[in-house]
Amino acid sequence: MRFLFVHQNFPGQFRHLATALADDPGHGVVALGDAARLQGRAALHPRLRTLGYPSEGAKAGPGTHHYVREFEAAVRRGQAVARAAMQVRQQGFVPDVVVAHPAWGEALFLRDIFPAARHVCYCEFYYHGEGADVGFDPEFPASLDSRLRARVRNATQLLALAAADAGIAPTEWQQTRYPTEFQPKIQLLHEGIDTGTVRPDPQAVLRLGGRTLTAADEVVTYVARNLEPYRGIHVLLRALPALLAARPRAEVVIVGGDEVSYGQQLPAGETYRARYSREVGDRVDWSRVHFLGRIPYADFLTVLQVSSVHVYLTYPFVLSWSLLEAMAAGCLVVASATPPVREVLRHGGNGLLVDFFDHAALAEVVGQVLAKPSDQAGLRAAARETIVDRFDLRTRCLPAQVRFLTAPP
Image (cartoon, rainbow, N blue to C red; front, side):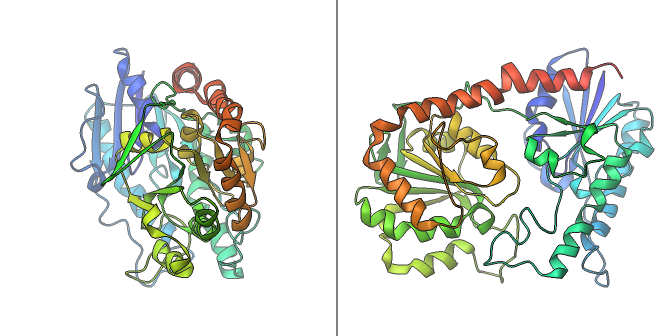
């Protein structure tokens, strides 16, 4: 069979699936991605051909209504992808299956280029004006304008889904965000966690300049792509004064960049990390707080392996891989009791839950765990067991995805 993967930041969620299909000499695999993002990246697989499309023109005009700027940019991106797909077709590659992430417009016109293919959309998140991320945080209240804009943001996905044969969603909560009329065509298929790689290591050592941390130390960890309110950085930083005062030997390791992936943008030069660090000010012993920025994946795993308590906070939004990886690494996770988290984490069963906004409770619970680390062995083991049983890449998720894509039409 022949497969075409399309993702502006390829491989994105398709890394393991695309390479698994490329491993089979009976398959042909091509990927399309944003040329600017692909530049300088190493080849993912010797039998996987990756091509770039130009995205310089994928921007809205200055006079476009702000509700539809993203949609106009998506249409322009979709046109660029369609032209690239036509070149792929002219070169003799006609896919049996097209798998695309529809959020940025790449899937809009692929049905027109490959009408006979089976088209599959990766359904990551459907926006709502209430009941999910918009308006969840009272520090960033939703206006009528923002709620109406959320509805319009779904236009690109809806057009792509209407033209698709099927969709895949990583979690049940994400699946059920989509309109009920589309849910029957959306299969629940998580991309999977490599539990052979992401596993506990009692001998792990994390070196931070002149400091060395191991699993025998009191290490509180937090990871996000970017340090922003959607992932609760303001709640974590507000918890630090009480936590560090109660646990004078605790060290806090924070991984993540200073950009804004989601939510409200800040004025140029300002970051959420700096904003909330200023708020807590000298009530925090900053010598015990280590901001690592973005780090290589191997270093990220070491952070998890030396963790005494891993904090995961999120709005009702896309569930991060980092939560599942922390559980696979045997972390004791203290997480926000928000809907996507509760699908995976059971309070007192395989982790601990706190109210997202209650930074005092977060400090108290983390402090209690640090005070009695030996009491948490059962939760740590149950956390890893959950990921092995439900999200293991090699034995569960990847075989299910391959079966789904290679099934007869």
